[in-house]
Image (cartoon, rainbow, N blue to C red; front, side):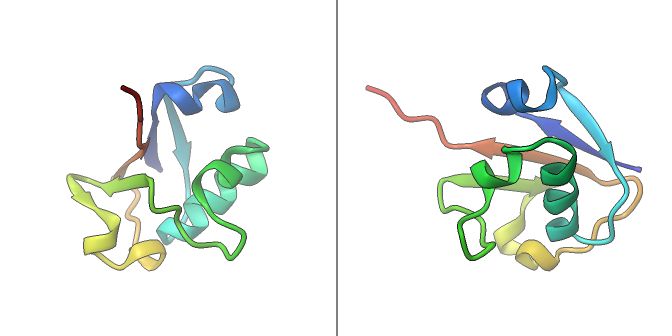
Length: 90
């Protein structure tokens, strides 16, 4: 199964877990499955039209998904996915 690494800001939504395993064929399915298992997670990552928020970076391996195929990026069982919402401050 693919491993999703969860950033600190999203961990409260997944019971504090740093990583979650998911079995899905593409990145969109990964996020939808996470949202089904962990209410509130997909709403922090996807907008009302089901697109990634601009302030959320999602990496498959070391490549940001927008430079791949976005939410249709294929996910292999050995993929490592990292979800990183932007942090602002001053």
